[in-house]
Amino acid sequence: MKENTKIDTTHKVITIRGLKKSFGELDVLKGVDMDLYQGENLVVLGRSGTGKSVLIKIIAGLLPPDEGSVNVLNHEITGIKEKEMDALRLKIGFSFQNSALYDSMTVRENLEFPLRRHEKGLSENEINQRVEELLEDVGLSQTINQMPSQLSGGQRKRIGIARTLILKPEIMLYDEPTAGLDPITSMDINNLINEVQQKFNTSSIIITHDLTCAKITGDRIVMLLDGQFQRQGTFDEVFTTEDERVKAFYDYNFTD
Ligand SMILES: Nc1ncnc2c1ncn2[C@@H]1O[C@H](COP(=O)(O)OP(=O)(O)OP(=O)(O)O)[C@@H](O)[C@H]1O
Image 1 (spheres, rainbow, N blue to C red):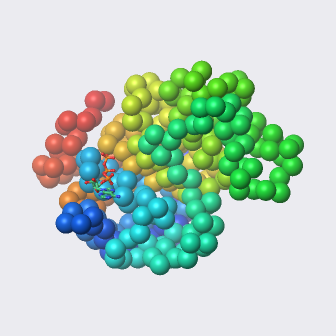
Image 2 (tube, protein in one colour; image 1 turned 135 degrees about the vertical axis):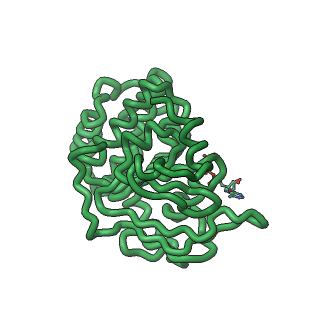
């Protein structure tokens, strides 16, 4: 069970009602309702192809919903104007499954990049300070002048998350944060996700099929099955069920 989280259940940062999304004949999301509270880590679990990535791409304004309401930080994103969405996107940190660093840039340059692009008024001193502070926060100050090719997979992932954090997002979206990492490195990333929650007071959605990640990072878990959220609660609540689809997911996946 997680401790020390500062969740404000009176303040929703995302509210989704009746969200539907299809691709041609394929109905992926068939009426999803979801809330994300201020300061919460919400884990979305589901098998491959159930629409987890589609869900967070809709939240990030990268895919349009077909039906329903998606409210993010008090902006309804159905039919939102591109300019308003661009401004909103800056408050959403999206850590992609394969979020690649720029190979030809050092760690410092990788972290400077979003700042130079989106916060044009900053002095060189301020840029240096933001980069150095953030590297310290993610425990990788020593890598500042290294190239991505010189980092381990876990370090690259950490720097990728740091690059997302540098714009101080209010919401973090993590798409399969532990995919392709060994169990020890995965645990390192799980811990980082919790540290980010505590230090930056972000609200996060973590999509994963890694149950260890779900258990460690999730204040609340929702399970996407057949296009809808079928189970939600704490980790133990979600898996205390006779639903064979949920039990199968647990038995196959969990190694603790
Ligand atoms: N832009 C798109 N065009 C057509 N089909 C799409 C598109 N994006 C996603 N899909 C389909 O929607 C379904 C859900 O995809 P999604 O990537 O959300 O799955 P997922 O739950 O994230 O799976 P995984 O765990 O494998 O990443 C898949 O069948 C996928 O092929």
